[in-house]
Length: 243
Image (cartoon, rainbow, N blue to C red):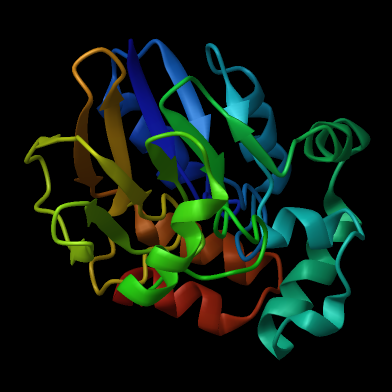
């Protein structure tokens, strides 16, 4: 099965739509959270996501906060301002969708899905090998797919060397998976690795192949909608900076 793995759409409908078109032929979508937050189109993103085939989705911290499950004070000023706007504009059907999501789930016998980390599904950032190592006992499958950092990354555990390595993968270069690992497809709607292109990955459940991808999208259109909505200027500028 060919799975489109996405995360951190952040209400960026244009980026999300572009990713779906670029990925083209897939059998399922696994979404790692933060469907809303920051961007101008939360309802459109939820609706488009809910229409995807064989969808499995977990909530991110922005999704949880939009539902009132996390205090707005947990976020910085600009993020909080965006969050309060998202809460005002989210439709009843969008809220129902977000409220139905499990915080962590085994997508199949090989893969666990979470937003932040397996041990703290909503909030923890896995940015280094130490944090990745501490999370290995927190999932029973071979691999965990996570988001939250907005950076494409692959943490693999070498049992023989008892060592966790970090790799920033090359776009379009397939990675054969074995052993155990924690993988991040990057962010669809707000990358933070100095590459403004929307990020995603394709996972082949049969061959155990992970393929990171990037695609350019119409950033200026999204920036204009952010400004029209009266959202923080920072959230418009950072789209073009990839940071």
